[in-house]
Image (tube, rainbow, N blue to C red; front, side):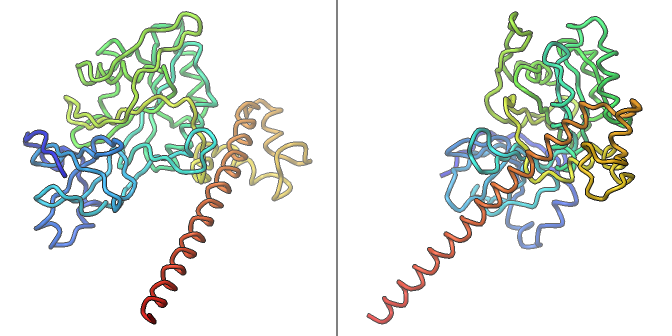
Length: 352
């Protein structure tokens, strides 16, 4: 069952359609199906936006796992056909003890990594989000929110810039439209952007300012720890006045990485480059003689905190990737077992 919600007119380009997606369609699909973009994912339904308007699709067992930002094909009768390949995809290991992947958003051009300039400021957390962005193949922009809450935002901005001299870093006041306007270069028509960050970082305030509306509820600052109250509870896709599409995501109290080796390499490229100069190829950068990484720390060219976070994230990725791989193997083995039982049952039935 499907429900037609509205009938506005919008072009595929305005929805973020690209040649990469166009090339995946056969002539028959282009003539008889309609591309649509996932705008919200609920437990029992999927909301999509197509040129003819918004449609609510009922979730059926044949559907793959979908994320906000995905492109799908639907029939003129608003029936799901298939999911198109993603050109970028954010996912994380599910929070807590669950051994599974959790989709965050897909087909993004730019991700704004939001970090508050109050007591929540944390360089290691920024590096964690950067690894995720690099792994997804999306351009990261660091947005230091609540710049009005500190005396010298430039000092903290410089600390973030030391992570990577080519990194784009903007310190803004989310309540000031002129300040938030510095994000406009990434928000052109047809571009898809997302805000990622921990709970209370000020993402909902930024979203409301960019959209010039109260699209998301916002909470005040708790006086005991200077953190904002978590307000966004679901992922959703919004059309911005400047023409970009904005994916708003809930604040993440936990962001565990898995299968993120390329993201780590890109985020910690300075350490990776130094490692090639170590005396031993298997140097762990701890106490080995001739370690170029330790020499850089002693000379002040490398922050020891950064090396500690590099080791921490690598250990986390190794553990989580192994756990997920083990679950995949068990699931595959179980699938073969069920298939064998079904095959045997069919044989017995044919003999009867």
